[in-house]
Length: 285
Image 1 (cartoon, rainbow, N blue to C red):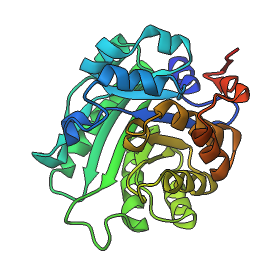
Image 2 (image 1 turned 90 degrees about the horizontal axis):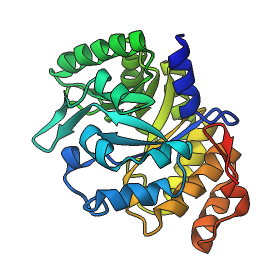
Image 3 (image 1 turned 135 degrees about the vertical axis):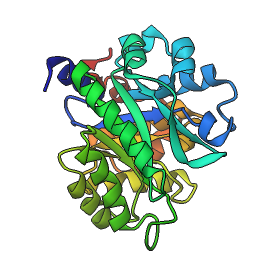
Image 4 (image 1 turned 180 degrees about the vertical axis):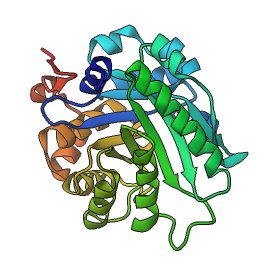
């Protein structure tokens, strides 16, 4: 592995837990300007206040909103370089390049691919091309790979379909694969095994709508061997995104349980121990 790539991966993944907690705010092209994202500068600032390991943004927002102070505080930028939309829901189309990711100071580039449709071939070709260029320049590649197409058999989020999705990414050289939950720790462990040596991180999805449901899913995915999480809407649509991020950090990096996380959000207090949790290998005082 190139030194530059190793350094960037080290900034993304906590040096003690070995896990990643990233928050995505790249939804507007894909899903519309959702509540909580209209004032995107405030949304990013409220998430950054909780000190995730990384924030995922499209280039136009990143260049204007992602502050150098976030990087100084140990928060990495992941540049999203594709998007689907309500008008082409199964086709992730390019929006940025590896060169742009490096110019913006990103520690990773993120590419999407939706499997199970005829246009999967087009997306796989693009993903493979980005993997080749990113590897040559020492930039980690993350990929959002979801089973979505009508050609897939059975339930879209079946173990077999999600295994196929993550393995497709691993086969072409993706470093970190974000995918959907299969419903249990036991089944998701099979997904994690199928992706190796790539790291699997979990998308937020819609397990129920209550904060407890998301924290429970987080605990189960950790038990399954997930390398981390890239969560979105349930974090920045909460009245206190900063506290939700802090609670997730307690679970992801300190192995706290669901009740601990819920209590942290409910009390609305900033635990001095949480404030000193290592981010990017540094301890905040």
